[in-house]
Length: 218
Picture 1: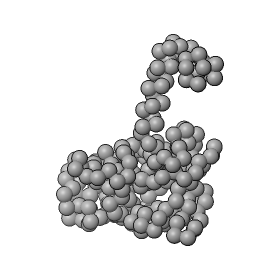
Picture 2: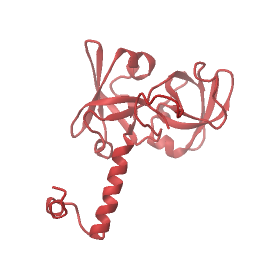
Picture 3: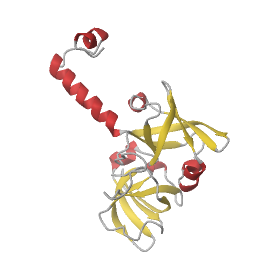
């Protein structure tokens, strides 16, 4: 479990390709002192397991499903990545609850400055946008952010100088692919509602306004 408060960045020092997987080595000094074999660490928001480590690096195995769902397949040697160690129960929850399980990717379609802020617009599929709520939380490449705008095709976030300085988001450009993890609360609510709906209807009806009125939802 993570918070989306990025602790620092590392650099990709090695990529060993399998048939559909990779072994990823990350060079990073700042967050290694208490890291151990088997620990979870978020790399660009993706929960990975430390399989080997040294004085200033660690290695993680990335399976094919993760490669399909994230932007790790686009990583290049010495590219910067966001890093966050797993949450301790004694830590402050400064961001929001982040699992490190990516829902999918989006594409940056606009980037512009406004005083001390940088606005980023991200185009995303409907499977992701249905969980995106204005003023709600979202994790982009593992960074906890507030959604400032959403429409039928995209959403916007605004980055303060600190976020741009301590994460990789400030260096992202139009056309770049970004990992997206939606707020888990919305997904649980959807699941519970659909289970309840299927129990009431036997799975044979679609949700309509008449159905919602009949059962007291509107």
